[in-house]
Image 1 (cartoon, one colour):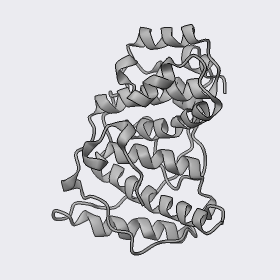
Image 2 (cartoon, one colour):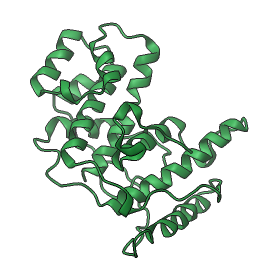
Image 3 (tube, one colour):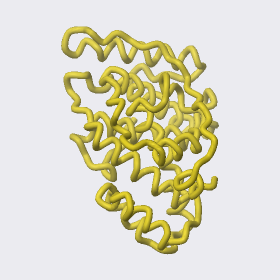
Amino acid sequence: MDWIKRLLGKARREKPISVELPPIDADEEIFGDQPLRKQWAEGVLRAEGIPVNPHLPMIESEAQITLRTPREVAERLQALTMVAFKGSEDPEQAHFESIITERGLRPCFSPEELAFVDDPKPDIHASTQFSWRCEAAWVLLWALRHVDGQLGPPRTTCNVSFLAETVHDTADLTAKGLRSANDILNEADLIYRCHWAVRQAGLDGKDAPGGLHPGVTMERHQALNWLIGYNDGADWDDVTTDT
């Protein structure tokens, strides 16, 4: 993946592929959205042939969360895109740092990301781990309404070209606003149950069910948990993906 060209140059933009999922109506009394959302997510998984654990609890309701602000999401999106770029490619360090300086991105990085950014020769393990952050970035791109439809089950990797071009070409990533709490919680509930299925399959010595992609699942789960302020609004490095 030629991230330099996609971040700094122009390339043909392809329309992203998204999976349409039926929305749910969360205009219920306080906490009324939780059982309906759980029922909906389990129904999606059953229809896709993915095992369901009916004992998994409901996630937070709209009344219990505080979404990140559009500005926070846009800054996190840019940071994730940049570390994924460094992890995927082998950019010349001075050039890489100049991009960060020109865009004023240094304050956007988490402590773990900043250590990676400042390391002129990161090891292969670190580079591989950070290269996957493009999948978390895709969730935030979706949350800022730059990706149509819903995210759907995490089966395929994101459209990296579209991600890089959009982050590069969009003057104000917040211009379209943030998706509704209902939309984001739908995806958070679905990924939570998908992640349980992936982890349980691993414990059983089996492949992830229903074509779920373990790496995509993990990254999406962290991004969605961060969006809804999971772990009492923890900073990025401290957001967990409990199942």
